[in-house]
Length: 317
Image (cartoon, rainbow, N blue to C red; front, side):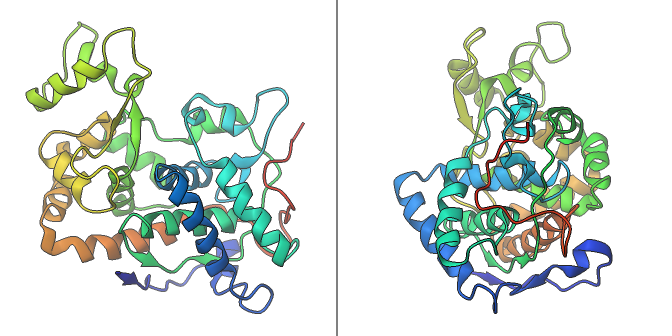
């Protein structure tokens, strides 16, 4: 087990009220409670580990880490109804954990904090690092489809585009390169990368940066008109949190265009190649822990802002 202590930083604003061990007095043992429930959930469905990591990412990038992605809309106008979120999974797992926590500590622990803990534990149960999570977030009560479409980074964005999407969330270039490696877990639907196989420039061509053998393998699964199938984003070690993502990217076997684009930038490409070396695995783990803490501070509600809900998936309309 690799235990990583994220570097402490001086922060201002709402995120300054986040802290390690926020619930030590009000709900002691809550992080262990969350981890125990997730262990049981993952025993029945290991794919939810990737789902919960993605759930936290998609929540934080829209209105901040406030569990607004958990909210429902009768009119299908909430964040979860946006096209990039239609394949997001893990809502039921968060609700199950929340129910356990509510039974022990009613109306004390936010859904947003549970989502942050769940993402951390998903990494840990996938043989990744066990890092500390700041807590003290409160939950938002606004969720808009249009904001999800605006704020979530595109799966085919280049480094300039990705840097912009991360930058407006006060995340650095390094955070972008490091957090992209969350794609070492999970799968993507063929529809999210089929353009690279069949119509890269609009002329019915294939992305020339794709490894030919890998492209042939993908085309055998993702046939034109049949794009509901999925492929692992890290073909080397798809269920293990490690540096397999960087090895795949360096070998031109990145599934998404946004991942392949890292090699087009000298600094991003240098980090990718550095992390393909197994001797640097603990460095990557430490970097990932820091960047996850950074992302966990995005747009948080603390103090008297927001709310603590008994359930996470209430309706907003």
